Image (cartoon, rainbow, N blue to C red; front, top):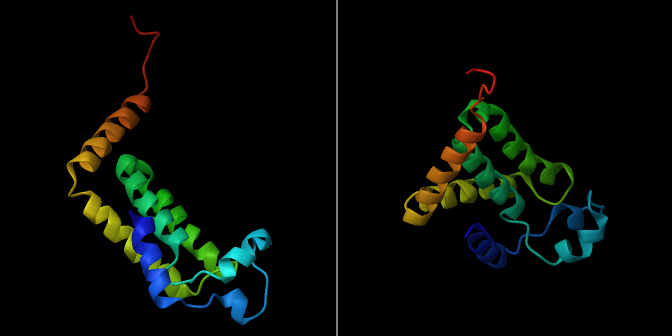
Length: 132
């Protein structure tokens, strides 16, 4: 669902990417040709990375800070590599958070999230096999 929202916004705004304006390469030069013809606003990578981080932080609240930091850095890497402007990344995060908020209102998602939390908790509960 985040891809649909981001794609429509990219097609509407058609913002030129920084590496195109500055005639520079990105960290992924093999993808530059394709990226050069797609809009930069909002960042789909930042949207996806932030949405996943928000969900994973719910599943593993003990590591919430680390997960959210990594989700944030995922978007920042797009600015560092010249693929996006900072405002592209910020808008992408907003879209990712919005998608997660909408997902929380769907029974399928809330059921899957509940199951994932339970499974994660079971996998992270130490068992003492030596105790009789």
